[in-house]
Length: 167
Image (cartoon, rainbow, N blue to C red; front, side, top):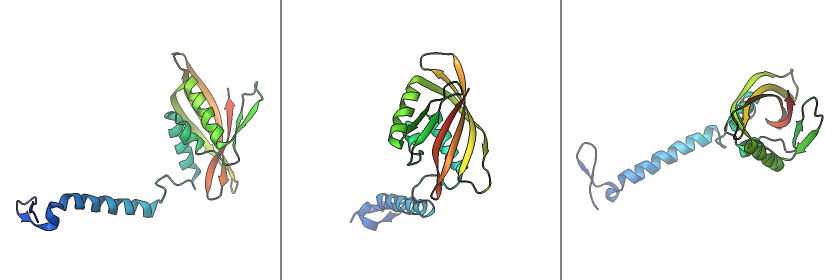
């Protein structure tokens, strides 16, 4: 068994010189265990719609189609066109991934800001108004799009169900 020199300069014959690797593993294991006790998924809690809106904002600003698609309700996402374009498109969560991916290939996000959130007492829906500051890829001309985003109660959490484009 070889000796290990500890910080004080004394020799320690503990574990044949494997004190540091064992200590690091022990610290990592203990830290990971504590994180799992408070939040087993490691993600922000989705029982508060504000937390879900914050996840949505972060995914939109970083142009993360997977992050946005993961927030879509299992029943799908409805995208409503502007008042002059009355089309409505419905996307499953997997289709929503490609919708957002294509959207972010065409437009670069400069900022995504929630203006306000509104929820009536004891309703399974919550609305938020957002401003998406963007420009077309390869262009410097800025554009601002208003969005009304709707979350619907889904079990113990909230899921993205509608995006209404407001011009």
